[in-house]
Length: 446
Image (cartoon, rainbow, N blue to C red; front, side, top):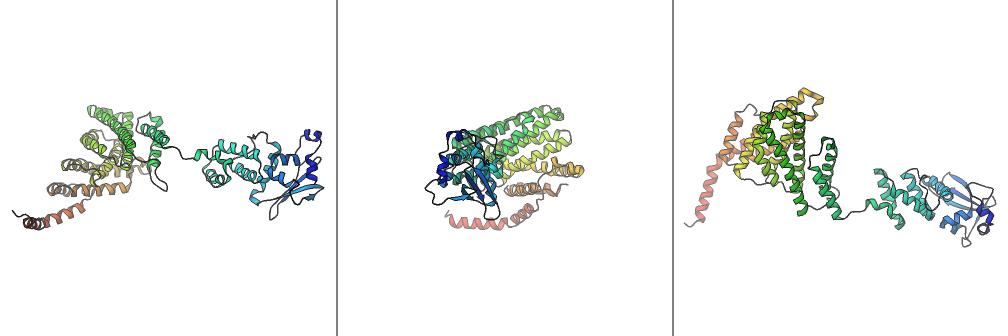
């Protein structure tokens, strides 16, 4: 076979640099073809093909049963899909330029490298495979490229595994280390210039703990819960310290920097509520907010009315709504006196604040993004007040409803449902309780 003769070329020919397409010393034609229309010839050199591709070495060996002659040369036909044609051409060219598995500047992006890698695996070109794997392992990927890599690389075996190193699951200890560092930063008070970084950290913490199509990144064990509670405690302490400072010097509320700092702490507290709720450890936070409620309402009441104050009120309501919801739906159990106290503090606060926020939104129009509150949150807060009131003793309910019916802000929160239930309960109370008394007498032999 002529291919064998070509492998025994004189030393002088071996020393002459070979270039693809050089017909003067080519001894092989590689014909790359598709099933449809594309058909190109490439004048190549058997010693390069045999050295760098097991596929071509097999095709040019004595053991291959047939050998086609084209233009007085051995011919190797390679069939491929139209979409892979250019990758086959690239692999053929790379056989001539790749040295020691290194060809850093010839991949032209991740997509192209993936196509070349698939052909290199097909044609069994170890040097190109090694270089391609090194490239794909080292460069960054777009999201679409990552999805394509996940489709292609796993079926290529151990030789391509290094590419997937960045996608491998990490140990639980590594996840916890990241979580602890992130929760500490997310509940800290860095300079304002770092607020975007802190917001990103908070978003990622929520993602770690959320169950969606995948399980949460880490299990909420006692160690995790303890750390989160400690971080939330330190956050609330900073908030409480600033609250005390404002109570002592209300003129601080005219300081733009102080207002922004106070609003930032409120935003952090609102976010912390979401994490604490996910982990079912809201109790300490609820108790702290309950104890501080009078001071919070007092600071807001005494501050001079400004647009910044309205925004601050909105942030206060966002936190209060989460705390009241935890109490109202039994996630945190408080004594009757404390539940009544929370209603007496926050019902008037919300009742007066909502019209101010609605007015600010109407006045500022398109610039009102800072004052906008999710309509569902207002509705949820109204339902929470109804639940809280209906869980109080009937006499306290009557006092709250009497005040509501005579208030100018009767429209919100709308306590009609609570009023209707109170009326029904009160009307049937004697009959209900007399039945209970009769049954009790029947049971009690004394």
